[in-house]
Length: 102
Image (cartoon, rainbow, N blue to C red):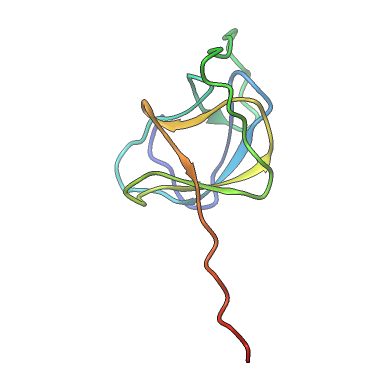
């Protein structure tokens, strides 16, 4: 996939997952879902099948990040594919704890 910028919407070629880019590196990135490259929303989906070993699923409203923190994606429509940057799976971004109000 080409360079991504904040606000770009992308979708899976093999399931219902749709994402919005929150943060992306300056270089080209290879964002995948279910083993297939993500495509811009609205483009025709290729005839591809989801990889059975990459079916962890996505959750609506959750943010996904890579280990280095260079990319952050917000799930706007859930699906059954596993998100990855190349071959490295993305993980759920942990929410920051709120300060105690004594």
